[in-house]
Image (cartoon, rainbow, N blue to C red; front, side, top):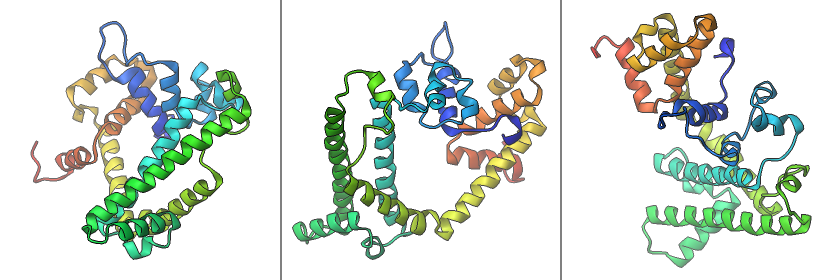
Amino acid sequence: MREHGGFEHNLQSLRVVDFLEERYAEFPGLNLTFETREGILKHCSMKNAAELGELGQRFLDKHQPSLEAQVANLADEIAYNNHDVDDGLRSGLIQIDTLREVSLFARHYGDVERRYPQLAARRKIYETVRRMIDQGVTDLIETSRARIADQRIRTVDDVRTLQNPLMDYSDAVREQTRDLKRFLRQHLYAHYRVRRMSTKAIRVVRDLFGAFMADPKLLPDQDQERLATAAASDGPAARARIIADYIAGMTDRYAIREHARLFSPAELT
């Protein structure tokens, strides 16, 4: 999409709830509140922010988002960090002995082993991850509550005009979280098997986009209808955006199947 306005995943999420979801007779989208939409749009380029009106103004003004949006951002971080630990161990891409290099994991895993020495290995991991999540959530609540009280926050404008976000971990837990993220980048995200799959994913997306741009009649009927109603003057950019919407809405498995349908002679439908 580089030549057709670019693609930002947070902006695409907003596009889904604002336009692409079709649940109501009188308007497109889900008619979500400003605060919910702000929580979805965690990051945004300045160019796109300028086109979003009130929702994008905070990026232009260098203001903070609401407390709810700040919480959503950190909850997302806690969820995916700990999910990746679990996923990495289950897949065999990382090992417990290697993960013990991370103080956050080592402490909780050691506590679990001492308290439940007879517990099955898989349940030890579940219990360790549960405790890591609990520590992050509890620390976030306690630290944020103290910072809100210290800053004497009374209104949402008080939140927005601060230099730094109010919702945060303590210094110790923030450093432990950074240590975990550094470990995951080095040992999981950069693992050769992950890189191979990422390369495949890039190829699948590029192939699908190229095929649909070359022949939009390959798209499903509902997407061809969207193309037909798009203004003719919009040209390739409008076509590209509709194709991007279709591909961005695919699950991994669906994208792989769609790629096989288009490029594999064995797939006839």
